[in-house]
Amino acid sequence: MKLGEQKNEGVEDNVEKKNISQRMKKLCAILNSPIIDINELRNILWGGIPDEMTFSVREKCWKLALGYLPLNREETEKVLKKKRDEYENLKKQYYKKNKMSEDELKILRQIKVDIPRTKSCYNIFCNRKIQELSEHVLFIYSVRHPACGYVQGINDMITPFLIVFLRPIILKKEITSEDIDNITDDKLKNVESDLYFCLSKLLEQIQDNYTFGQPVHWSKYLKEMDFQQMLLFMQRFPTQNWKIQDIESLLSEAFVLKNAFQSSPKHFS
Image (cartoon, rainbow, N blue to C red; front, side, top):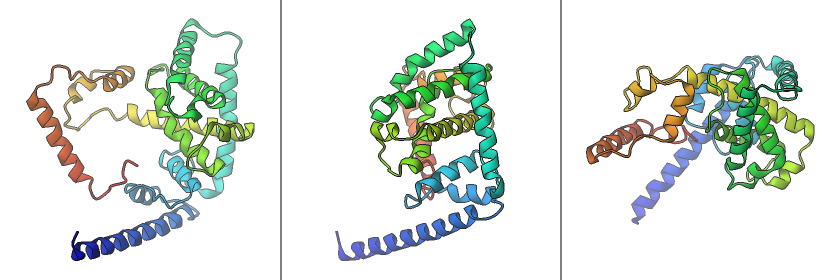
């Protein structure tokens, strides 16, 4: 590497650090406002949340972006209490009732099969407490949303929420099963409630956003599918008969998208 190249890299690093610092200040200012400007928040979140931010900031940003937390900061505690009480009532109504229907038992059996498979390479998802709360959330969501119900793959969608919601409690990036065992039951109940409502918010947005106006390979097929069929389809694309030109076309579109998002490297982080 030439000396000039090393100097340029140093300048770029300094510029990047300055940009991150400015974004962190702007993000903190938005979150500390009495009334949070959701459009400003989403604009800054487009580039990702800087790794230097605290775990609690990331958690709050996710909940705000999904529409779970109120934009009026004074109402946050009141809304959270109401939502958590509501979830406990839902659990009593749907999960803890004396008798389930055949359809409900079928859903529960499938969830019980899928839960142990969820990110089994990470020991926290093998933790009994995590598996139990995941089962509650997935079952209650499924019976309350019969139009989409439960489909394999939804169990994997809860994992990033769990990590983001657990880190502010444990104050560690790498969470172990032992860390989970040390969390109080009340805190785990709060995580479970927040997980349920945030998953619901996310899935609502997915169902309302099929492929309208998006010129992708599979749009005409997805438009004909219901929510369950769409998720199953995306887990196993029918690519077995693809030819070289199909692969070339896909790679070309991927290159276009990569360049379109290159100014937002952390958009999907």
